[in-house]
Image (cartoon, rainbow, N blue to C red):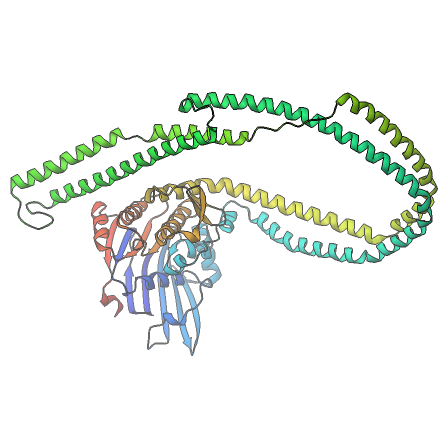
Length: 587
């Protein structure tokens, strides 16, 4: 856990020495004082080799800046310091780390934190910190690589990465072997030309076979049409039976529809009516809940105000305060009574029934149309005659083909001597094996990660819905990509609002830290400022309560929302505190 941060000549800070406690800390300061710079410095100090050295972080008038972070761990107190120096327009950095008084090389420092946190430093840098640059970037931390490491899929992932180049080389070999076959095709063409002398004798026999085959095929096609007509007849009967059954089900579910009314239209009208009822009930329920929350807050403020009106600060006598409390209490009772009478669930169940019927009716499709077919008995007699004619013509052709077999043997000898063809087969086999291996590895990794990601996705979605209950189903893929359902369509993360992006990234990071790592802290830069007041309060309360979760001992939040931070600290004294970053800190 991070216990102390010291900055020297870092952006606006000449010197800063800040002690950080466990639990939730809200660092309050107006814009422009340096809240974001503080998180940037801590993240940079803990990410050697992961973040570029930015020369603009050095305070004006100086050539060097430093960030020092002190952490506590099971192995003792660990202090890491990074310094950045300017050399003209170029910047270089220097790293040092000390564990209980003993210097550590950078590699050992990385190993200690990686083992302690069960995550590599690059992943921690992009997950345990949510700074302005990480909010702007569309890509999330490499969750797939991290989960492969957590669930011991590294070997499979490495094997998959090795197969890619091998498959590329094998495909290149196939293309080369194909090009080398051009001369082989020319040799085969020459051999076939030598056999051309037999074509005149074979032409008449082939024509006879072709004519007989065409006649036999025509009769066969007519027979198939007759069979298809019979199948259509059966399908039409089945369609009629299913349609009548559906109409009976619709009558049971929504009432008797008009005889001539299309079932789709009936179900669509009923579905819209039920859906309007669900939306109306939910809207009224949400309005009543908001009214309940506002009345409770007003009553709480009236209680806290003592003998003064919390709005105009005028002294209230006992009668005025009593009347106000009575009115608020009566309003609360009315709202709660109304809330108990509103239940959209029966309408939702009916909507589900109607939608299921609608899908089944849609799957029924249109009634098959019937076709007129030829007489099947006549077709049987003609088919027997046509088959006999075809067999006779084929026998005559076979006699001529035996004479041409010698020429074919020459072609076979040439083909047998072509090593390039065998090489091509081997290369195709190699490509097929590599391709199958790649698909199998990908399938195995995706299957395992999908199973392991399900609890994380469920927890992220639960926290998301606590903030945005009207925007459910936040989806998380193994690579960290997020999206959500929007009216039945998939809304890509890039189309999220600024507040939605911030909440999604924050919930993703907090849940990932809790579920897949042992990182004991999360530092977030101004997460509340992108939200409307209700969402701001919900996110702030969630952050205030998360420090009690097992494994996440420290949450550090910068904000200029001082009243909200103070209220949260009052509700959880000892676990939530407010720190103020004033101008003297940056002098």
